[in-house]
Length: 66
Image (cartoon, rainbow, N blue to C red; front, side, top):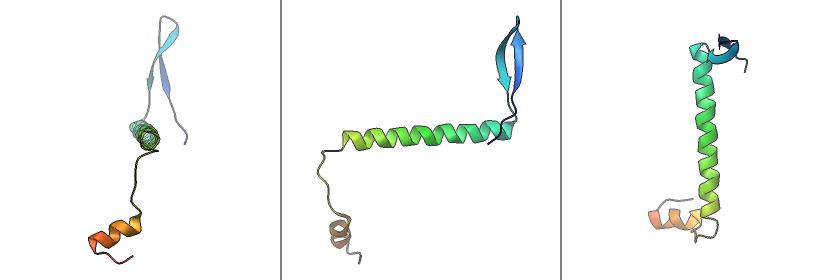
């Protein structure tokens, strides 16, 4: 992905960045996906020792043919 930032300077230093809206939205989606991945990994880590039920057993209880 290529981004095309425009830097706005204040008192000789870069202070703000302006991006085309399409690029901003693409970056926002990437950040949200990354946060979702971090949340999933954290949840998996916290539940690592939790009891589980095999999918085939759940499907059988629900009356779904595997």
